[in-house]
Image (tube, one colour):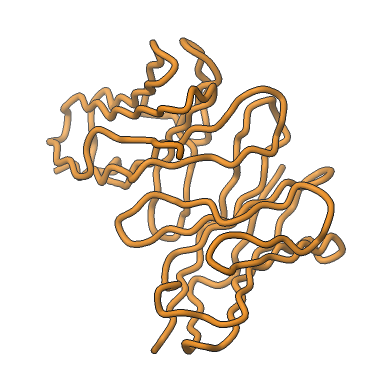
Amino acid sequence: DVKVTQSSRYLVKRTGEKVFLECVQDMDHENMFWYRQDPGLGLRLIYFSYDVKMKEKGDIPEGYSVSREKKERFSLILESASTNQTSMYLCASSPGGLAPTHEQYFGPGTRLTVT
Amino acid sequence: AQSVAQPEDQVNVAEGNPLTVKCTYSVSGNPYLFWYVQYPNRGLQFLLKYITGDNLVKGSYGFEAEFNKSQTSFHLKKPSALVSDSALYFCAVRDRGGATNKLIFGTGTLLAVQP
């Protein structure tokens, strides 16, 4: 079974802090994704990566950055946390290549509260 | 641009009755469609997908979905609902804009099954 793990289930940070969310997958997937989930808005893509050191902006990248130094690990960074970044953050991975048919595998999520 | 709509925020059904969760999509070209389920405080779990072939797709936990090209719909169905099916359901469509397996999600439908 594919396993995607996230470093924290719950996190509370103060406004202005730098926040790191870590995601690790164990299936040698090329693609990794970071989403945020908010009630009524569904899942919105923040950033994704299709290879080590490669990244692309999603739909809502402002206020976030990412890092992918190793294939299995994809980090989401909030440079200066703000209260409007309070949300559920979900990491996902999927096989790469040109085949568009693969589903994504999700981690359990990190509920971040910024006070 | 690709998009997915889930017109119902919540669906209520009695245990043992059939259930339907609606999804419509808009894509240029052939769609690749997915359903995911999210139980409370958990990540998303893959249920089923339509790539090509038979319009009726069967998935996990007794769920199925019917692809209807003329109505641009991909409704999720189950013949007999269980209380344990109560969860948040997301429809997603593959973004054909790139080589990566990027998905566009609907806003989600909360399914409540009453005993």
